Length: 236
Image 1 (tube, rainbow, N blue to C red):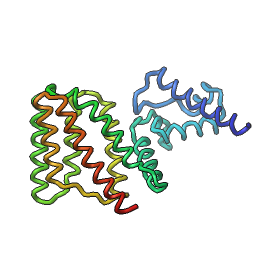
Image 2 (tube, helix red, strand yellow):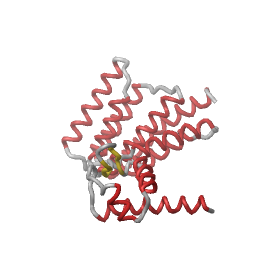
Image 3 (cartoon, rainbow, N blue to C red):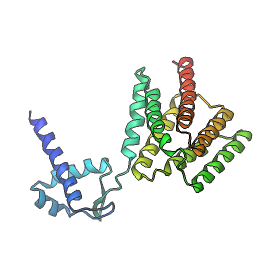
């Protein structure tokens, strides 16, 4: 019971520091009150304040700069990426289909988004997407990897939604999925198929055909799912 009470007290202190950041509308990089000031404001001991700040730093909420003070952190999705990647690796070695589950999560998000973009992307974005598909085709002809161009294509595609948070979430999915995929399985894509699928996504979005755009995204993820399934069957 004593351990539970201590854990709850520590959690409460973290929440009060987060509330202080919100109430004062402090942006990333803004200095927090000094340690003695936090002790006074929160009515907590030095050790309790330090432990709370360390926990919040692990979440990216605060940044401790030794010798300089404590600042509001970048609040990035780095902890989420690490958590997704570790959970997927751990699940894989427990015999779970964790990589396929992560893929399904990405597919659900992107399928729901692409229909909103069909016929609505500005011409500048369409030109950029066309250039990326053409670059992908050149890379495929040279036998080069397409991962970087593939990533740029998806980032450019959803940039039209003008949603910073959404962009960061999709980047987090991408980082976690590709980091784990490279570690766990050997399922190289057919570059010609990859190029064809991205060309179809672009054509569907450009034409304003939402159902066609959704089918194109599903086909793209379906191909990845099939390759991962084959790799899992070959390397149980």
